[in-house]
Image (cartoon, rainbow, N blue to C red; front, side, top):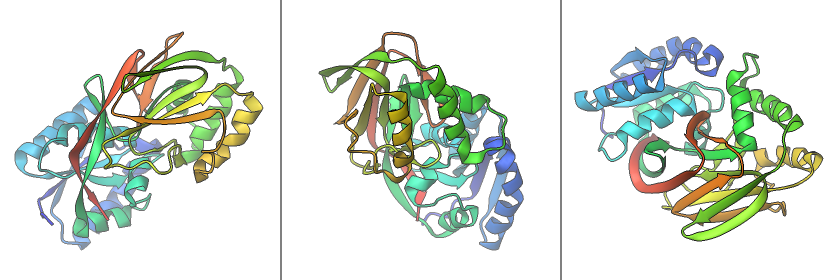
Length: 291
């Protein structure tokens, strides 16, 4: 494997300060493995973009340590290059690390940086912005807004808390979705366009989604009583929800969607676009370090 020096791009506030607390352990683990590295702290996605560009220019391996939003921002700068993305889970969800097989353990992540192999994966694009996980809007917009605003020390449980809060005031929306030119209309909760298939701190919305198939997975969540919606929620963490009749699963390379009222689409935990939005896949454009 190419042993370029590492540039750790760290969001110290990620995960309610989790990344900052774990950073000394990560630094010690990297030294123990004989890896050369430097640390840059960032507090905004535009700054993270700049640091990733600087790592590319310096011939360093950019390593994102923070939440999925930070990882997606760094990935956006590395896509199309010959430099691989390194990932150290430091956020609340850590869903991309989970999909790669790294999980939430920073020691394992450091092992991957030292001994892992390069893997080529797809990325998704909406309005010129890159994401790795799932872009969704509707009910999920409300959930993400509540989760991001929460200061409660709930860790991954913040998403469950946000779901319960959002569900109280939710009312169904009408959606129009076009998948590779084929139109679909429905009333319901949300539209999700998945690259990795995982979001919300381990919710396997599309359990069999592949990072390297050149396709996006689309999930339409139709109208259902709130009690039924809530009862189905725990099954999403196990990926056993897929036979729920209110869910429609589609696949395509270009997905356009909008609703009968305004929504902000969120991806990797951060706002990424206002509806209407169009998502496309960029197959095999990102190198990542994986187990």
